[in-house]
Image 1 (cartoon, rainbow, N blue to C red):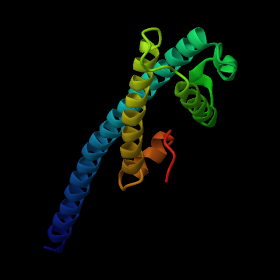
Image 2: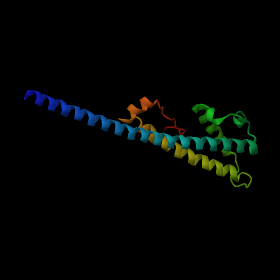
Image 3: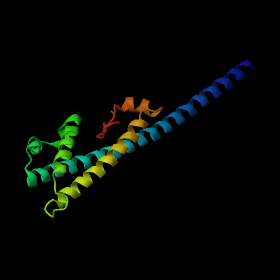
Image 4: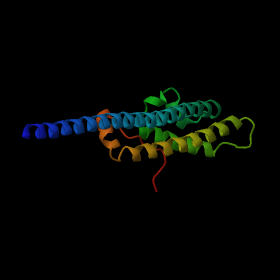
Length: 158
């Protein structure tokens, strides 16, 4: 009698452990997929931003030949560190102030600059959402396992 009682308790515990392992496995799958999806969104926005930044540097240097843009003319924007990209954006803002925004010759520069600003806002908002998400439990646990790092924003915090 005691043997069947203990064997039924052991069986119940084993079933409970198996169910918990299945639940943990399924939830881990969905959490990892969600993190990957959010990471891809940020990465795509980041890539678009770098492409637009390269395009604007090329345009401004070609049409305006500004000396501050010369060091960035032949570098790979993607390989620049974050702080260097922030400095480049400040230089672009300075140079953009001198652009005649009504001229037909600079119309494409103005349009590209506006596109860059829109992409930067979109990218930074996605970065903020991603960074906030990966600081919360259970995402932070999986981010450590996946060895993902946070992204940096390009706007100045006030």
